[in-house]
Length: 232
Ligand code: HPA
Image (cartoon, rainbow, N blue to C red; front, top):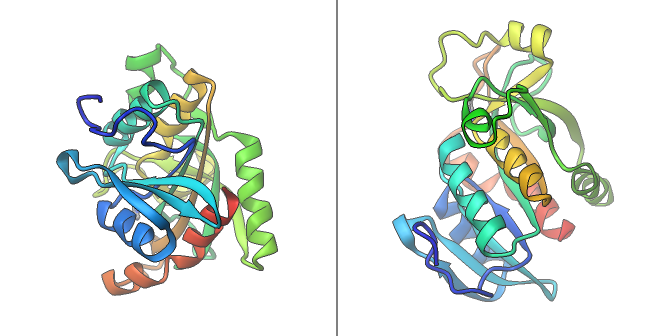
């Protein structure tokens, strides 16, 4: 056990699907997994291990933001022998033509966060996802006839953001959407020589002001969830 995860050794599968929201983890387990059991309850950061099409998988929440994702993915890779983490989540679009409910794959993340500098002495502001795992998600989406776009995300520390102006993020850094966790996940995977990928559904558009409702977010994320599950 770790300070934040009360699963026993062996309770967690080789591949973990990580939504931000613990209730989404619960929804995925209840809706899609067979013979699942609860493997984490600390701080209600719920985790479940079960079977999808006969394949053992864990679904566990990361919480919101780089520090939270940083803790959970670090502990999963280091102490639970997890090999693959697929983050599933939502993002705010920086482009007019990247619309709500579009699905994107984050091939890299840019961040002003100090997370990688503090932990690994790494000062690069851009970090890549694991190419082969990202490719697998892309191939799965294609086979399910679901369109996905590959983009760089901005992993921001501030949801209510006054300075990271969308047009500048696109022009200067090539970021097409904002989210808050991929940077920590990708860095931890790189450090431990493990695999990480990130698939996101656009939940709001920071240019047009288009938004999804919380009810829509409850039900319309299933395409992305299916892509992640079918990929394992
Ligand atoms: N900013 C950061 N993270 C997000 C957003 C956003 O606008 N939308 C969904 N996750």
